Image (tube, rainbow, N blue to C red; front, side, top):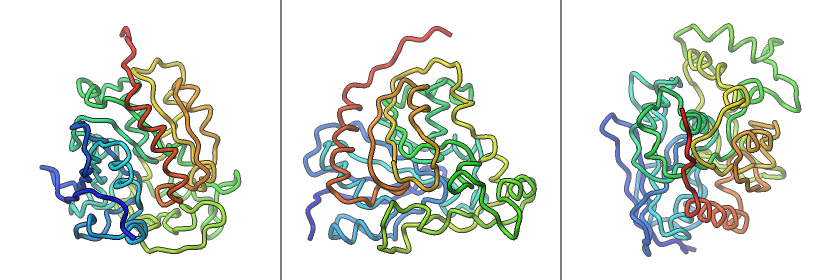
Length: 302
């Protein structure tokens, strides 16, 4: 069955990043919702997604129904900018770094920013007015952090313990590999890490890209949300979407939300909450819509 009405196009930014756009049939705003994807989230197969049924939309993309449903429920166009690491750029393939994150942000339009997983670190930088984003932050009219990044250690852990590979804990392995310009196995590739509790349905599009460069660990190991946000004032009030069944980041995100003085909404779903049941997604999208309508910049003295 097909219930979503939108037009769809896929393209590339001037620097070659893969983009998508979902334009709602009943558009009420020109200001886009801008989704920046995180570590290992790959674009769906080429083709016009407006022609697909709801089930086909859901099963053929990590982002599932979410972009089309969000466009329809909010009346805003939805723009997606994929990370340079998955945009099939020879010099950027598999590479995650501060420069690559900045490139992803700069390739994106002014709008309401929706930042998932590792992309939430861009949000932390914008909210704290990091010098890397000086003069560019105000194109983010509002910020939403979905299943936000905590630490690399958390991402490499299960039930509070760092996982092991051939008897070596993964955090140590990544520290050893971080300076080597070689491909590296990504431990959260398997769909299971992105699922919520009790999920058994499988799709080849619901995991993460398999092989990043080992030097990406150098960047990931520096990212610590609580350390970044300690004792800082934020430039606006963000929304945090707390994925309660998250297996990639199992640390409680409530403290991060409190440090940001954020609005918070919860969903009983895993890291890839985009493919959750429609009845779970609708309240989250409605809360997100309220947030983007209400967001205001906070006066800050530097």
